[in-house]
Amino acid sequence: MVTKVRRLIEAYELSTVGQELADRWVGDGYERESLRALADRFNRRLLAANMESAGLSPLDGEVDNTYRLLTDDEVSAGMETQARRRLEREEVDPEELLGDFVSHQAIHTYLTKDREVDPPENQTSAADRLDRDRETIQRLQSRLEAVTDDTIGRLNTADSIDIGDFSVLVDVQVFCEECGQQYEIGELLTRGGCQCDSTPTDGTDSEE
Image (cartoon, rainbow, N blue to C red):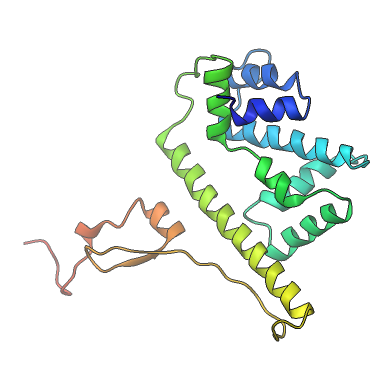
């Protein structure tokens, strides 16, 4: 079975990228990079290749900035939508591009399966995994906001719906059925869980 990263390397003719990813992961000739950093690096290569195929000549920093607008959790939904529309005007399909973007898991599979690279010791800590999972959820929230914002805008322009100025808010809540507490997902992950045992249910101190 061909891994996603290998397929993209062949499709985009990025023949030298595979070895570079392996070298950067183990720190051979480069400062060692995490799987997440390697995924971002690879995705920026894909973005640059798409822009160049569309006849663009990205200025210094333009690829990095466009990638940030498409993926950074801190970027507003409106700015992300503008970046997508700018790519569309240049005949770059943002949905197809984002579908090609890879995760750190895909990079790990490629390096360990296709290139048979032994993982560096202590590469990923529990805290690192938690941070990555939190960022994944936040990114999905941001993308859902962007898609919803774009959809409502198009429907409003086409007079399919009638709405004035609007904002799209996506809030993921987690409800603990054991103790009845409810948390925003970011808060829950930051707290390290619900901690039911420390939550009094009758207004009294639980200690004897």
